[in-house]
Amino acid sequence: MSFPPPPRRTQADRRAGTITALLDASVTCLAERGYAATSTAAVCAEAGVSQGALFRHFPTRQALLVATAEHVATRNVAAFRETVGSDVDTVDDVAAVLAHLRTVVLSPANQTWRELLVAARADADLREALRPARESLQAQMLDAAADLWGDRLPADDLAPVLSVVVNMLDGLAFSALDPDPAAAPGRTVDRALRLLAEMIVHRYDQQETR
Image 1: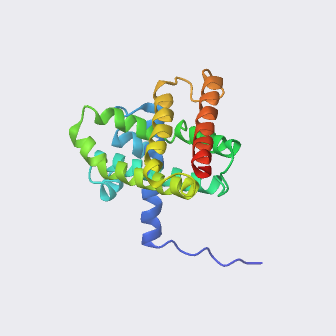
Image 2: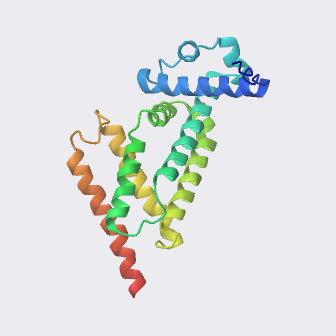
Image 3: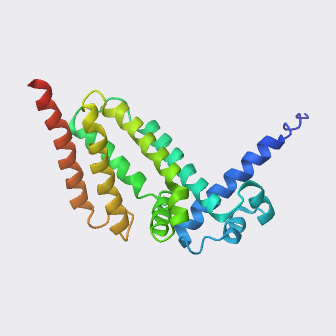
């Protein structure tokens, strides 16, 4: 029995496949090697793509790294939305959301952002190039938070509460040598997230009953 040949990949398909391979390879290199060692040669070797192909899609190393940050942000927010349900009402619900967000922040893929943000402190060009990606990430996170807590939190409090959560988890990510949530100070952080969930739920429950 003969089978029809698979459909031929279009030029657009090949282009998209190459770009995805380069972005995924850049994520791997940043997580495993760090910013300084993530050269275009290293990314190409990881992706199995020539440097000529890389520069056809990304004119500079900086353009590649900024696109990688955008790629990780969009993918992580989408995965977060798929994992977290729409019913987030109780302390247990909110604590579970925060625990999942903690896993996302500590993930190897999210190391991309930490590497680039640290590098941007001493590189004004990189800092400016990352600005649109950072603003896009903040907008996506606010949209996700509004979908989760828009009915519970006043609009003026939504961004500040998100800032408290993100800064706490980012601080943990920068200070933790071991990204395993079970590693020390795992139990302390678990309790801190629980306290934060209790404050979010009880504070606004009390406001609604006044």
